[in-house]
Length: 189
Image (cartoon, rainbow, N blue to C red; front, top):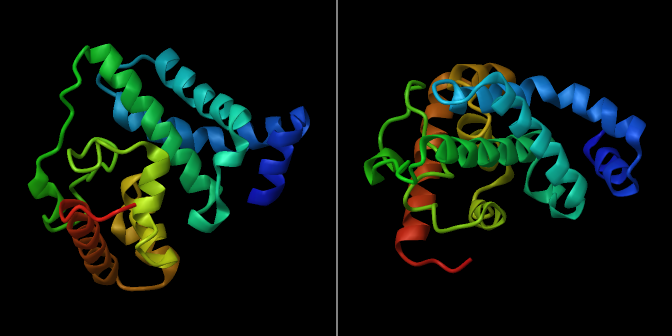
């Protein structure tokens, strides 16, 4: 099933196709959520966040915009948001900000830049983040989302796209600088 068919199934509340979608994407979303909640949450917390992703898609299938990225990346973005909300709740702390310097630091695969908790991006809703990401080309946006939302390593993205790892690292660096410049200069969404 492609992204359009999945969204159509969610709009029509087609439980068979929705069940297939849940089975297909749950392992990936579990991995994304587990990476955030590993030190704070239980298995039940992780499973609840993953379930919340599909409930969100059930309630808001029209929020997905195929021109902005794939359904896989969109679901990872929602999963990350749900996991961060759960993390905040579990830690009873809203102080999850990453220093501004992380936007321009060299991405060698070991750092994990977090769009949702960066102080620059924290003021935006996740739907607005997609508007911000519109300044990037579809290829740049995909690489950025795969790295920082999906948590994929640059070497994996490079292998998948058939380019050198250094190209991915450079792409991430340039994309982060473009976004930083737009946001800090008061660019309009």
